[in-house]
Image 1 (tube, protein in one colour):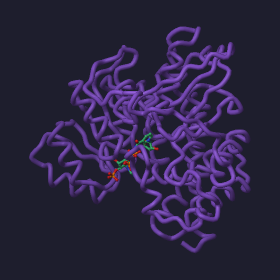
Image 2 (cartoon, rainbow, N blue to C red):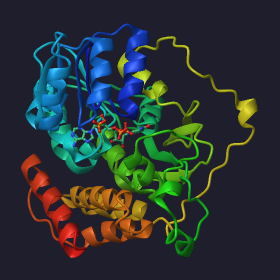
Image 3 (cartoon, helix red, strand yellow):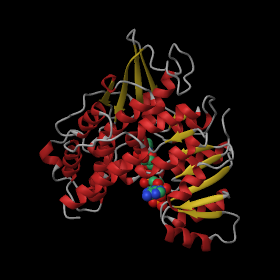
Image 4 (cartoon, protein in one colour):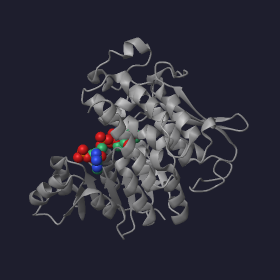
Amino acid sequence: MRCEDLVILGSTGSVGVQTLDVARRLGRRILALSAHVNTDKMEQQIRAHHPRFAVMEDPAAAADLAVRVADTGTRILAGQEGLCAIASLPDPCLVVNAVVGMVGLMPTLAAVQAGHDVALANKETLVAGGAPVMRAAAEHHVHILPVDSEHSAIFQCLQASPVGRWAPPDPRQGQHIARLILTASGGPFFGKTPDQLRQVTLQAALQHPNWNMGAKITVDSATMMNKGLELIEARWLFDMDPERIDALVHRQSIVHSMIEFEDGSVLAQMGVPDMRLPILYALTFPDRMTMELPRLDLTQIGRLTFEQPDHEAFPCLGYCREAIRRGGLYPAAVNAANEKANELFRQGKIRFTDIADMVCAALDGRYPGEDTPEEILRVDQECRQRIACQNGF
Ligand SMILES: NC(=O)c1ccc[n+]([C@@H]2O[C@H](COP(=O)([O-])OP(=O)(O)OC[C@H]3O[C@@H](n4cnc5c(N)ncnc54)[C@H](OP(=O)(O)O)[C@@H]3O)[C@@H](O)[C@H]2O)c1
């Protein structure tokens, strides 16, 4: 049965704020919220939503927040332990994971092991830890509900598959599906040559043409690493051979993704580019609820276009495909390299095109070991440190 009460990890971010908006309109109770350092926004959210718990990952921010909201009934926790504690509350709830980065892995596992369904926006969790997360989800009979618009689109299309309503983790879910087709906006630099990309600025990289998102994913969209991360995410969510997952550039971001059946029939899910739509579906699945949101008017859009990605200018998509092809700890390695490189670019320390070079270099490493959470965290740290040392940061 669907759980009405929500725990929202990363509530101060782009997806987190939109999730709170959807939750408020649905009249859902908020059990717990989390952020990293943004105490101002967290204080506002505590006063508006009255959660029982709020977590600041940063201990100093948690101490500051505890003083600020001492007049409320909200208990303040800190660090990874705090995140895992609210992800695994004993109360029935849906855990929405909207933190950015690998830091979301252990809270996702904590939620799954506590038997909670997870609405997952935090794509790095599945990229680095897809195997243990999906194993744990199967073992604990919980659903991983996609929030990413592309995966929500595939999830919605799969409701029409011959196996009936798709309820993960159903091993029959891939039956009759020939291909998954992820769509990509192409980001702000679509059409630029590798030479032109060497000169682009952070400010330009942060100007996404269609979506208003957090800084890390906006830069990931500009490098098209985001589509590579999504390819790996789709491999795990839908138990699909990565060779049967394609990506197409669709500049208008109206078709959010498609599935092709064995008989050649293709289903596409469409909607305005507004994250509240996939969030709403994740929160209300398997039902559909009415909500006052912008509606799609195809006559206003006029033309929908589809093109092949430019792999020479945007090689990250190919690097991610190679990482998932090799399997094991390679996806965790490319994810870590990208997180570090993306951060260095946002700090003004490296050029835009260095990001792809650093992701490529991660593929040159050797990562023996099992894909357990401990090994994934070890490789993650190793890759970040290697980049920091090799580049003098
Ligand atoms: N934005 C979108 O439209 C969109 C669409 C699809 C998928 N996603 C995915 O959803 C996730 C969130 O994206 P976003 O754009 O919402 O990111 P964002 O705006 O940067 O928000 C990130 C959230 O995570 C928190 N956070 C950051 N670092 C943390 C840490 N070390 N420990 C604990 N919490 C931390 C932030 O807290 P502070 O505010 O305190 O920093 C904030 O609440 C990403 O994985 C992204 O790829 C996003």
